[in-house]
Image (cartoon, helix red, strand yellow):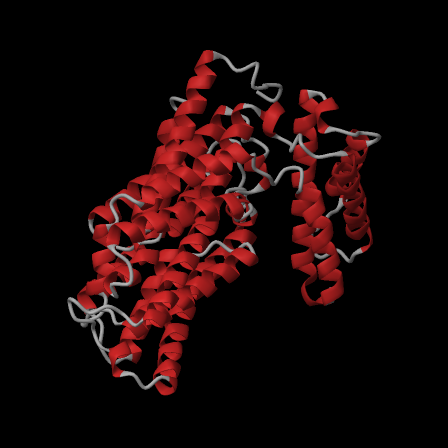
Amino acid sequence: MTHVTLAGLTPSHWLLVCVALAVVCGFEFVNGFHDTANAVATVIYTRSLRPWVAVVWSGFCNFLGVYLGGVAVAFSIVHLLPVDLLVQINTHQGLAMVFALLGSAILWNFGTWYLALPASSSHALIGAILGVGLANRFLPGHGAGLGINWSKAGEVGLSLLLSPLIGFCAAALLLLAVKRLIASPKLYEPPADDDAPPGWIRAILIVTCTGVSFAHGSNDGQKGVGMVMLILIGLAPAHYALNLRQDAAQIARTNEASQKLAEFLERSPRHGKSDATHAVRAAEQIERLLARQTSYRSLEAADRWELRTSLLELDAAVRGRVQLLGNRLDHQQREQIAAWRAELVRPIEYAPTWVEMMVALSLGIGTTIGWKRIVVTVGERIGKMHLTYGQGACAELVAMMTIGLADRFGFPVSTTQVLSSAVAGTMTANRAGVQSATVRKIALAWVLTLPATMLLAGLFLWLFRLFV
């Protein structure tokens, strides 16, 4: 399939493209109504906005978040898979992998939504990716250790573990600080049925709802973008393996970065079995393919795939060498290598505008549907008291800042877990207490998400490989 272009797709391949894109849109649609509570629960329960105004506005902001949020998180998720799987994505086995991980994530998301549990869509997708990676390890012809990019998995796992703890502690501390600075009992008591919030607190809640919605779109929506790109690269590799819109200057910067990184590999100390020979050969291949090129469109279809493979292999080798060297590299060296790597992968870490629009619409529309189940859980069932104005503002502000920082550094975090933990933190700080039964259910869903989706994805991969 390496030579396949859009014009060369058969009717059966076009059908597969449509089905695959529909599955991704389905994942983002479910993600939208599953995670709506992350942004709208506080404005609804503090009566800052009417429910349908809140969810429509949140849906629009989720749309903008996907469209304007870039692709850093998208490819952070994609690179959980090891290089050997990414360079085989243009095979039937690669497509089976994508279908398996999306199917398991959708099934788990829908199940936890039905049970009104604010579980993490991020955990579900990451668990599914780990599941297909592990299943791939035990398929014939694959050696031990090839199933998962454990380095990237460790980074992602740490961000998912720390973000809810940060949400809980930061929201609790913020509420305690606010109570010291603003001595208004009305802010820390449940609002009456006909009571409207003060104008300034309402403005804060609407702003934070907007920020969390945008951040949710730019973080969770990017995951769908990454999945769509895997599908397109797998089905029409000659067209989507490289960003064909890049100009001659961008191509020259990629070639220069490749040579600089190859020099780094050759001169830096080697540890254990680390060997730069294969990576340097990949850099030589990149230089050969890019010599005097002004456009990727002038490359033959097979050369485009070969270039993509070489870029992935060189980047993986540099990432591994940097990790091996650890503190032996100073801050300036790390910054320079990171800049070179960013230029190196720019031709392969991209998304067409229509992909971002499609995912953005799916997430935005999904946000406006099915919101009530999770909203009720966040607003009424985490704490023993109704959510107060102060709690809502503090929880949303912490969630917005935490997720926004995660977007800035390309870390995939769980929007659901950050906000749920922040709400629990404010309940604790306000001495309102938490409902232990609900918290246990949320914790159980949190603990089970990774192993359950890993198992489902492994089973689906085995089934889909029989039919795809």
